[in-house]
Length: 186
Image 1 (tube, rainbow, N blue to C red):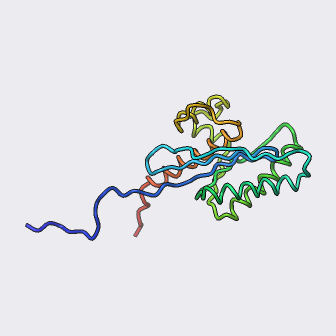
Image 2: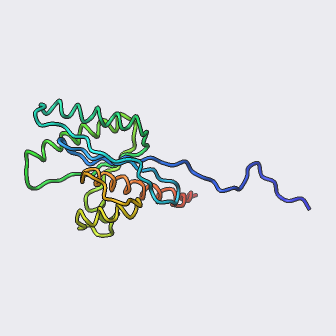
Image 3: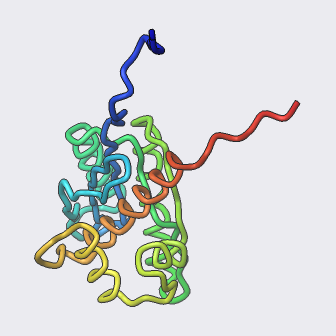
């Protein structure tokens, strides 16, 4: 009795890992977090850091420095997806304007690198990481440590926030790969 033969093996099909960069926007400090996720497994932290600029520098030079440093990180880690939180402020309008300008420059740098971009709101991010859209910073950091299996809190806070953004992207990417393909309607 012959059996079916196929031109390929039914061994486990493995998808290559995906690298995701989370960016917590700012102009004095920009948090960066990079995770790698494999199909159906928890993300793994590759690195986290903060890009900082000194206040004696004129604002345009600070923006240029931030973008140049972000480009170096992108070139080193080669992420495929970027996640940057949408911002909204109520308190200090001057800071809000400066952060918004820096965020625009960061978005341009990410898009110029050819990255797909996600922009969750703070509520979406917190809900995704902790299950509670009103989670505080400590709850977020505890979940980041648990998800990434870290033994200590990522520091500084901006880098921890960026890791949360990268985890958010990883969780949605894994969901997208697991969704069934849409059926064709005839």
